[in-house]
Image (cartoon, rainbow, N blue to C red):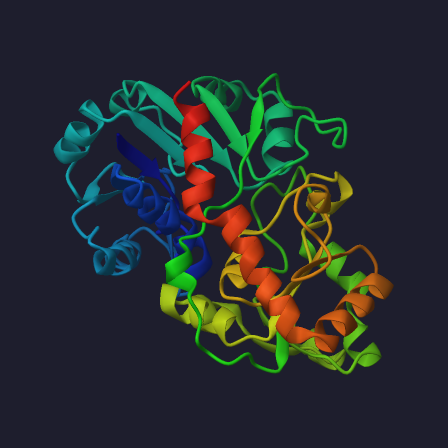
Length: 372
C-alpha cells in the first residue's frame, strides 16, 4: 500500500514526539508499504533556540529533515506552514502522493484540515494518543470538531478502556479501536550498561486541552516525598518546577536538553536503570487504560518500568519487567522488587516489548482494521 501519515514533528520538535511518528513510518515501510510524511496543523512551530512559538518554520522544517533523512526519508516529507506555504515537498508533490495513496493516517492531529487531496484517499484513520482528552473535547459538541472526526473511516486510541464498561468517558458516537504505540525494536537495541537511577522524561503541565482535563502536576504531588522513603535514586528530565522537586530529593535535568534530538532522547532512556513514570491526572481518574509510548521505548531498550496504573494493567502483563502502582506504598514496593532482581526484570521488560509493542505485531493489526 501507499500510506500518507500526518504527524506533529515540527510543531513539537522533541525526541519523544519524533520517535512516535518515525516508528510508524519505519514500521510500515518494513512491512513493505510505501510511506510519506506530512504536517498540516495550521499552527506555528515551537523554536527551542528562541524558546518561543515562531512564524518562521525554519527550525521545524530543518528538524524534520534531520530526523527523517538518516532513514532514507529525506525526500518523503512536506510541512505546511500556518500561512499555507509548503516546505520540503511541494503541494503538487503532496497531491501526487495522495492521488494514488491507499491510506491516510492522522496521528495525534497531524492535520486539522480536510484538503481535497486528503479526503480523496480511499481509507482514512485517526490515531488518538491523548485518550479522554480527545473524547471529552468531542463531547463539548463544537460542530467543526465533531465533523472533523466524522470524516474518518476508523478511530484508534491508546486508551485500552475507552468504550468499555471500565471507562465512563463518552465515545462521541464513535467506535474507538484500541492500539499501542508501535516500536521498531532494532532502533532500541541496547548495549549500554544500566545506570543507577530510575528516570523519566515528563511535562509537568500542558497547555492543550486545559478545559477538559488535569495534568501530571496533580498526580505527581502524591508521590513527591518518595525519594526520602527509598534508597533508589531518581532523575527527572522535566520542564516543570525543578527547584521544588530538588528540595524533595529528585535529581532533575532540563527536558528540552534531553529531548533536543532523537538520539539524545534515546540515549537518555538507554543509559537509565529503569523508568519511574507518573501519568496525567485525567488518564488516571477516568481509568482510560492509556499506556505511554515512552514507556514502550524503555521496555524495548531492556529497561524495567514502574509506571502509574491508568487501567492498563488489565491489558498488559504487570509484575515482572513492567510494574504498576496506584499509591506511594505500591510504588515503594515496585522499586524494591526491581532492585531485588534487576536482571530478571530487565529480561522480562524486553520480552514484553517484543510481544506487545513490536511494530511488526502492532501495525498489521491496525492495518487489518483500517482497511475494512
